[in-house]
Image (cartoon, rainbow, N blue to C red; front, side, top):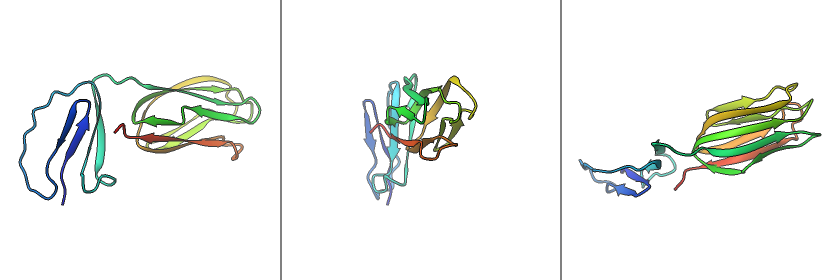
Length: 144
């Protein structure tokens, strides 16, 4: 009922669904992001990995002045990310949560902070802990 499907830069390999096979693939993997899944169950049985150097996605985030909050871009692919938060509020903070991530600035903190993180597939939320109406989301997908 299952198989393995491997894909990425210059790679597209799969075994047959339902067959019991012993296979050997000889591959040359280039730097980049690769995914694998079961063709019959791609939403349940899946994963990803990186090979070599993969450039981090750059994000700009801000909270304040006044009651404003933002994160750009709004969508990204899995992998390394650098998030620079500019906190210009005396009463609000920037709080980012999602798969395997929970980072925030302090409510009384004002300044700039940079977080180096690895984003996983899913929906991330950002918000102010003081004012619940200040919020938004980031969607992270596999690169394939």
